[in-house]
Amino acid sequence: MGGEGWRDSLVYYYCLKFALSAYATLFSIIGLVILCIGIYAEVERQKHRTLEGIFLAPALILLLLGITMFAVSFIGMVGSLRDNRTLLKTFFWVLLAIFITELLLLCIEIIFEKQMNAVFHSTVQDGIRHYYDDLDFKNILDFVQQKFSCCGGDEFRDWHVNPYHSCNSSGPLSCGVPYTCCIKKVTGEVINTLCGYKTLNKERLELVATIHVRGCIHAVGLWLKDNFEATFGIVCSLLFPQAVGLVMAWLYWQKLNEIHYRLDTVDFKALDMADFDFASLDLTGAGWCWCLPREGGYLPVLDKEDDTVNDDIFQSKV
Image (cartoon, rainbow, N blue to C red):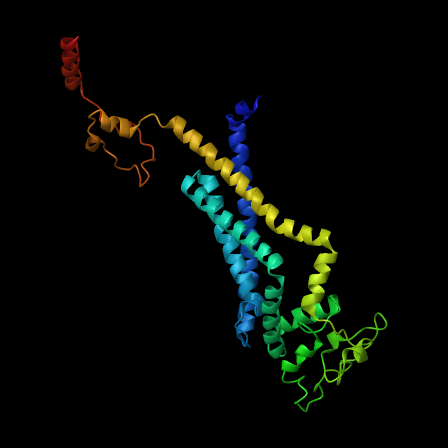
């Protein structure tokens, strides 16, 4: 079977239909799960709400991601199941806008790396200031500091902005950093939670064996550059599913256009140009799109007397 024959077959139509339906249904479920997790996290966050920045509130990110994924995928699912070209167009263009936005953000991060690092530094400093007030951000920063062997945003001295770790405070954490900044000398050793005591007023060279002195922004950036395969895999895992959805939506949209053009046996514009009385059509029950079928059709049917008169007129003209 040739390429044209395959595209004209019912198998091609049903393959596209059910593939796009399954794709959209899968991501609708994923989006709904993320949305539920985001709602739960936001309810918990509201109990001790201190941070308003979107970068500092993972619950808000989960809510936005879940709502977007569910809404867009649901539109695609309904459009593919109902063969609704309007919904398919909406699904395609919204998904394309999201895809292009992500590509632009990726390019901006690569081209304007220093400016973006400054934005991240300001955001992380705001999070450090409220480190003990927001459990979500605290857990994330602790994980990053331990995973990437770093401390603070730009450097370890960023912990000056925290009221508990500031050198002007008088508590046990004064002029120190959290234990997640400390260097583990032996794997599995008991953690000394005050291992970063009185480190903020010392020079970097004095601390190289005690705490990690480089900032997490630089540490994460270097890890992404050094592990290009992993970075490329992460980017592809985010963009490739969207690209697949765009291709399937476009192909199915074009297939539906072909089907509608073939089945459209009445050209209302041509009828109007031929002095056809468009107002005589009875469109009751046709729906807002004039596409709902009705037995007998919507064209006016002439009775026998009218047929006889028209035959006489026709014969006289001949």
